[in-house]
Length: 298
Length: 167
Image 1 (cartoon, one colour):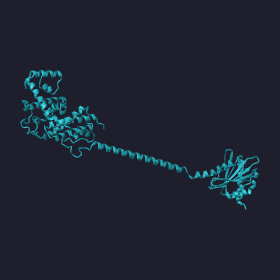
Image 2 (image 1 turned 45 degrees about the vertical axis):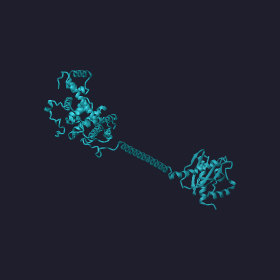
Image 3 (image 1 turned 120 degrees about the vertical axis):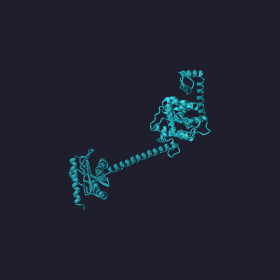
Image 4 (image 1 turned 90 degrees about the vertical axis):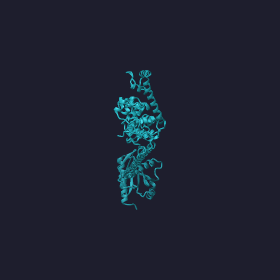
């Protein structure tokens, strides 16, 4: 090595070749090279070395790298835990090269979609089953046998009230008046099956007549009694389908209804009289019906 | 896991330079061997990224990490490298005769354009060592073997590159 000034050493020459100097320092080193040809030769030699190295290996960098190298980091960073760092060429080793990422992604996506669809189907099926169970249970609980009978028994009173409201105010309230009592009895016997007409004249209730009316479960008989003041009460009777104890007297809309059972028939007495009078009339009628049942007509 | 696509793109862009460096540090080794080294290095970096052992600050840092991995792999592999054939230029024969550290430092600086500090980090040595290895490498390649060299470390004769220390 040739003699160098104290402030320029070989490290500075290397730094000059490698571009590691700041501009000021670089200028001083270049000035030094101008007066030291031997050092300048050294620098030139190193530059030639660099050029020779680049000439020998630069073409490799200009090649297009194999796909496996271009994607090696990406594949390792996203899928495999990493290679065995033995330095061996293991890129052909089974398992070292993972399957292409797109296929794997596709499979994962398909799996997720299948799971989502299964979950949705399961949830919708459960919802449908729950809805069906709810509807079935509510449908069953809505139709117990008791209320049906109640509706029927309620039906006699309602039917009697409806019949009373329909015919007692009519211009022709009866089909057969009291003068055609026998004819009325025959008709009632034929259609309703009960032809015994109570006599309530002791209660100042005179028979106005009677008619066949539609009942809750078949033809019914309807007798109308009239008081001297024009007040009318109706006796409705129909063959009882259900043997249920008669309910207590019901009031409403200005009339009172009393229901009782006798000889498989349901009787309802409907009228605007006070409850006591209605009760008395009902008891009288019931007694006469029971008596006539006990002593059948010839 | 979300990997920075910028980092992965930087690694992909560094691949041509890595291949060049791998071929050079193998001193004319077979292309398949050099590419195998590059692949191992890239996969190593990718796996460390995946495991979050490695968190490069930017693309340049990621590129540096790939050179660190490749240099470490090449250091283990260098003893098995065959000598360059007669078709290789003289500079390759000169490279093959250099100790691994000198060869790596010279190539990283002259061929790959790294600064001295970056090279010190890649080879994992202080900067003074890097400068010393660079001096020795350039002297050896220019045939100017300094007197201190024979006293420091025994080296294969420059005229007989096929004789190598194997242990």
